[in-house]
Image 1 (cartoon, rainbow, N blue to C red):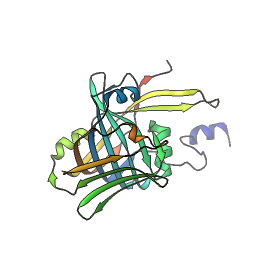
Image 2: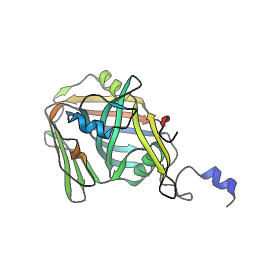
Image 3: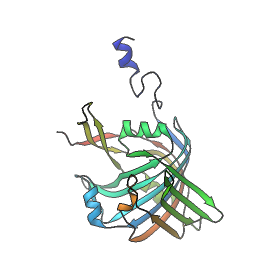
Length: 245
């Protein structure tokens, strides 16, 4: 294979059988359970990288079901997003993500810097309750629940919240293990169509785990819950801060 062939074909690993196709990445009937809660603000400050600033002591715990995803297939994801401010703009910083599908783990980490790890999350309806879970191996790490479609929520407000900027810490090492890329990345969800949004009574349990430490941001007070179904495109991001310069 010529060097020019390598340069032309190289967009993901492995070269001869990439783990995911080139974008754009469209998601149809993407389903969310987002539980907003208050936690220890000192713990947030210790976890959120500057120049991001935590927006109080707030965390959003998300369970996301993605049954129809371009190039990634059918999978489920869960994790914590921390509301932050960056240069006077409010957005969300993805602190932890756990999912059950290899292509979006590889693509998410390599392209954007999503903090994705392999685990076993679910989001499903049990009779009259929407239930989200996270298992790491055989250990139950998180359980969220909400009454199913108790009250409709303004779809325009939901769309505005989904369209807010999102921030990621992208780290790619040199072969010697030192950081070659260490950047703050900003990205947006695009072409959003909210098909429905609802609220209801909500609960969240987080448990300690060495390798899935969502419990390090304890639930002190639950503030709200929302159930969303939407179509959207995951936009490619841009670098807004380089930690190595």
